[in-house]
Image (cartoon, rainbow, N blue to C red; front, side, top):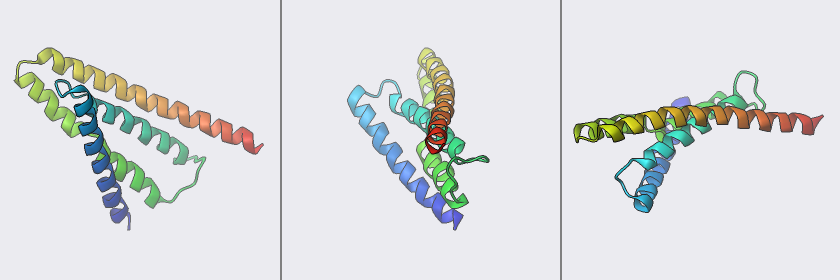
Length: 134
C-alpha cells in the first residue's frame, strides 16, 4: 500500500512542480531558473517541517503511509534536484559559468535555510500546541 501512496504523492508533487515552475517562468522570465530554486527551497522547508512534526517524537502521530505520501511522494515529486543539476550544467555549457556558480551557491544556501526554517517553524508550532494543551 505504501507504494500506492508514494505514487499518488509523486504525481501530485510533480504536477505542483510543473505548475509553479511554469508560473514563475511566465512571471519573471527564464534567463535564471527561479522556479526551480523556489521549488527546492519550498520542498526543503516542507520535508523538514513535516518530518519534525511527525518524526520519532511526534507532535502529530501519523501512519507510515501518510509519512511516505508526503516525504517520499509529494516532496520527492516536487523537489527538483535533477532539474537543478541539468540546468547548472546547461548554464556552464553555454558559457554562463558565473550564473551556474551563483545558482549552485544560492540553491545550497537557501535550501539549507529552508530546512532550518522548517525545523524552527515546527518547533514553534509544537511549543504552541504544547502550551495550549497545558
